[in-house]
Amino acid sequence: MKKVPVLIVGGGGAGLACSSYLSLMGIETLLVSALPTTSLLPKAHELNQRAMEVLSDLGLREAVEEIGTPPDNMRTSSIEIGFAGHPSAGQTLWKLECWGAAGQDPEWLLASPYPHCNLPQMHLEPLMKKRAEELAPESVLFGHKLIDLVQDDDGVTSTIENLATGETYQVRSDYVIAADGGRTVGKIVGIELEGVQNAAQEVSVHFSADLSGFGGNEDTLIRWIMLPHDDSAMCVLVPMGPKNWGTKSEEWVYHSNYEIGDPRVDDEEAIISDMRERLGIGDHPLQIHLVSRWFLGGVLADKFSVGRVFAVGDAAHRHPPTGGLGLNSALHDAQNLCWKLAFVVRGLAEPTLLQTYEPERRPVDARNVQRAVENSFQWIVSVMELGLGASDESTEEKWRRMERILSSDPAHREERAKVITAIQAHSMEFHEHAVEFGYEHASSAVIADGTESSADPDFHRFTPEARPGHPLPHAWLRDVYSQELSTLDLVDTSSFLLIAGEDADSWLEAGRALEAEGLPIRSVSIGHLKGEYFDHRVRWQHVRGHGPEGAVLVRPDRCIAFRAHHAVDDAQSTLRSVLNNVLGR
Image 1 (cartoon, rainbow, N blue to C red):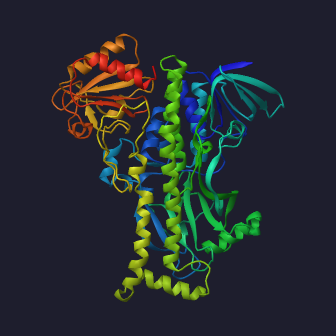
Image 2: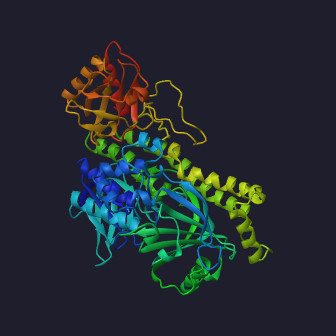
Image 3: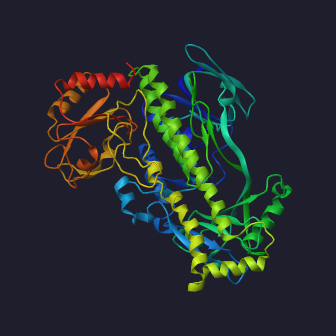
């Protein structure tokens, strides 16, 4: 029987991230996936700034940026009236800035040193799998299916089948991470997914084609194409690269919807025929790679852990694709859970630390599911304002209305303004910093300081702050050699970080004394005029929320665990007590 501290079930983005994180922290794992390989579908592709911080931790950021969408080809999302096949088709009704508009929005520059990226999951997961295999050779097994698991007081015994040989074997582990999309592990341990699972029937087609002759915007990543000539009302077209992007992309993915129960969904030729009709491209040459069917919905697990089993990613929450919050949330789950598992396995924390995973991540993931659902239903509002979809109105009448809305004639301004008001609401979907960064973790692994959060409950505004429970804010620093780095770069995934103010000698000395005792903590000082690192733009002083004699303690997942606003009588005892509380000791 093979024995490992952690068994990971599932080889998608969440499972592969967990494998690499734990390997980097010195924890042996075994990952098994029933699938023969990583995803063949484009699926998730947007990687927000927090996700890029995770990928940076895993040593993958540069590889992702190298093959991902160039920034100039993902500045906007466009709402277009038709694609081709009609004299008025292909015109842009409105463009929305996306995810910082490739550096044009200063809020994105202030939030993180890493820009938002775009890379289809079918290209991302092979990078993640390769990295996981580098860090844990012969411990990433695809084509190996979990059959059963049994928990006891001391661990978990899992039965695995090698699908290529039919051989079964057992794995004994201290803990199990369920990253299998809820297919197997959750059902065994009693995790239920709650919410709307079948709100709409969707189809996706991944294909290769030269669509450059149909025009379009080179700075647009996602085209939302309104269809006056079809009852489906709207489809979505997204370039997939892999070498060229914008209108010159070699590969594309098309998304469209059908009524639930429509028999055409089961007929691949009918789907392709409908796609050609909806896009208006006739018999234009296409190479079809894959047709997939899926249901639009938003669900959340009733619990994120049962005993020694922890659910991450799609096993814990599933989102509509609008806003791109699914994979990003999964990567954040992995970051939150893995340092806790590593500390417990290494004997640095009590198992009670693991009980903080659910109260920290479940509310955040619930909010992300809610936002994705709201983003999705806002498109129904926009379609209704445009007067599209099934109705008694003729196709010609619908096109005439589209031409009025597209017109710059002042006589049609009021009609256009009503539509644009609905469409502008989608700016939330592409400007959700307060969702990505503005969350707060609340658990025994966070010591509240009595201050009120400045987070915007409507998600319209994000204010970075080093308040307990919030992510560590980014600020550019310089060392004595004028090397520039971010506050985020100071954090190590295997230890806590104490950031002391410029006059906080007592906190700095306390941190270093505890480090000398062997506790997992590093200490630095940051100040504008003095310190190990210079706050040359005074950005850290602006966001830290404490005085020059104060300090913050940052967890390995870059969550603020504790903030001292000033000096205390016995900093070493206070800091020791804080660490013990956070670690459940």
